[in-house]
Length: 357
Ligand code: F6P
Figure 1: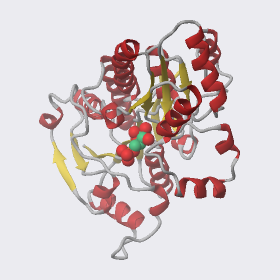
Figure 2: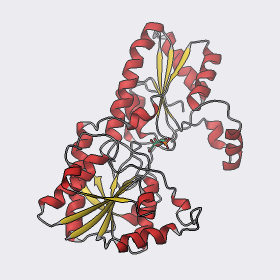
Figure 3: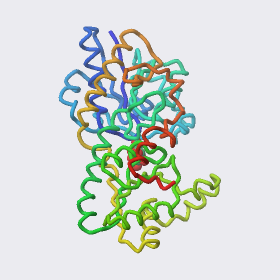
């Protein structure tokens, strides 16, 4: 008998359900009796002992379902060691609930913050297996995260729709894509949607270079320009500020987001009409794309296999086209970012895409 605790933590994404279904299916298929304890709303459920016993029926019909049947929440890692408002020691509470339920292991699905806590629980002696979810694809130790390809599809659809209206009106359009620290989503959706300019956090932009790229298109007879801009796109001047100076600047920031600042500057410098579109959380919503369904199922199946073998302390990831296990201590606290000198950036530049650098 295996007693498994399961939780989904952090921002949700597509294929969380597909991944959990994969774990449960592979465990059940092995013939080993299993009990699944689903902790509700991420680590909160584990801290406060809020769980539901789940059976095979709970995982039936959820392969295609977005969101997470367990609910999720953000419980920042930096607050984990701080007592809650009633003085509860959260880490001790998680451990106690784990031992009280006599769990064999926890299956934790999440992104960067989630992995820091998962690794801490491992260090505290709990058995943990994790699965890499995030639309940002910014987890260290895996070439791909589930949710990413579905989000690329949605952001690309958005850029596709903008294309037709941008062409009709001869405007400059900015599509703001999710990703505060990392630009994989913007880069991929931007390239897939044929954006002319792509601005990502890893490559600070010079607004004059952005304007040059727009003017060059106008000179060549193109009536419109499309920019894919990451939420975390940053100008060269801002990137040069100290943390303190940048924080001060942002405290008085008058724009809803960076795209509106860029739009205002482009409008002033070119006289062209500029519009901003923000697909926002639609990028995390809806049904997972086929790639994510397959990918999340594969990761889930492998997690099930590890659990049956009693191999704990790993994230199941994807490296060089293979499903692999990566030690949690190698994953926690590291960010996978787009390398400005990577092949894909070089190739995008060969296609004439400007990164404003
Ligand atoms: O989970 C990743 C992410 O979707 C980022 O791309 C985005 O910047 C952030 O979460 C949004 O967070 P929230 O849902 O808390 O507003």
